[in-house]
Image (cartoon, rainbow, N blue to C red; front, top):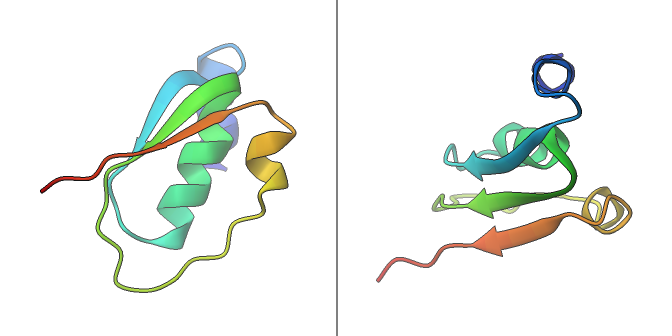
Length: 70
């Protein structure tokens, strides 16, 4: 539900969404909340593997970025 609200409030989704939670619902939310052609940026450190359908990104022509801090 929050993703639908974000998409409605931003006329189709945010230009850029940052995933900072490190849990699967946060990642999916960042992808789903960005506009078609938008960007999702992963900043989190993950404790567990997550399952994401590549089509959730590819079919919407989104860009997915990973930030590596060292």
